[in-house]
Length: 140
Image 1: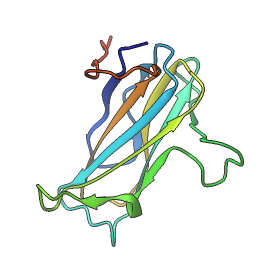
Image 2 (image 1 turned 135 degrees about the vertical axis):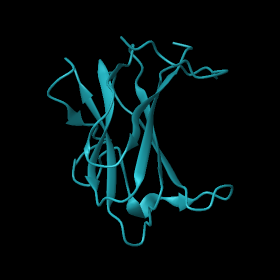
Image 3 (image 1 turned 120 degrees about the vertical axis):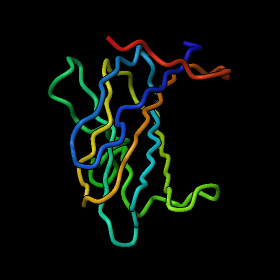
Image 4 (image 1 turned 90 degrees about the vertical axis):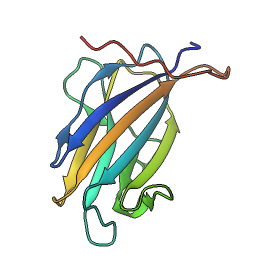
């Protein structure tokens, strides 16, 4: 599996809710990159974005990185963000996990205090070989 995937699951959202679903094509390494901007302040705002998985494109569950499940979900919260050195007022965070393959993934914004914008990219790979670039999957 030398073609890792990435897709923008949340695009300019300003409220809670699930993002675009994508088939993982058997990949078992997951990553989540989130940007918050247009007024986000990690010292006062609330934001949680997590990766969720499903076998059937419904009944999604958070991706648990191990046992016990408490506080071990593949997610990013307001305390994880750092301000961009290039763009003042833009905050970013990335987390990743090795897991077991699942058919479908999505990002889900589960907490959002309002007044700012969020983007979330989900990354998947499964090869021990180095990849030259991420492939953007086809969306139906």
